[in-house]
Picture 1: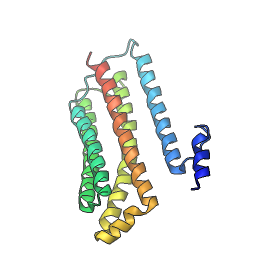
Picture 2: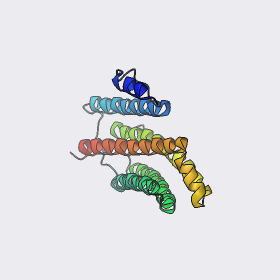
Picture 3: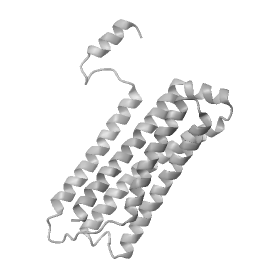
Length: 206
């Protein structure tokens, strides 16, 4: 890009500045998701004072699933670092570990739901429990999208076993953009769950 174009872009207002379209769309999507969860948490606070509200203790497995989710962000960060240093085998392994941790998170969340059901917390009877099911369920949908993207990325990495093929693949700008967007999204859903978990923990352990 010519220097004059770069300077013009830097001086343009933030709202009208030209951006990479896929990054912009993902940013809008994440803002929309954050707004959705903000509305759900606000509704939670509004209904918490109602007469039919009974606090529910969060399943212990949610602690483990939260730790798994945080570790998965570190493993994905390590995968990106390995890729930058052209350690392609480490990149494949760490990407696979991230995918496995994400699947473990899903299993643990479902396990948590089962433990809630076993203790009598019903979706149609306990208002507090219904919010827990709703918040964790909507987040699980976000996780499912991230897992599909990670699976596709991992499959592409496994198809390229030679150093040359992998190097050509990762230096391709669309590939680098794809990896960056998937990484950004995964960190986002990690932070999103951490915020929801801490919110629920604060309001259900009092």
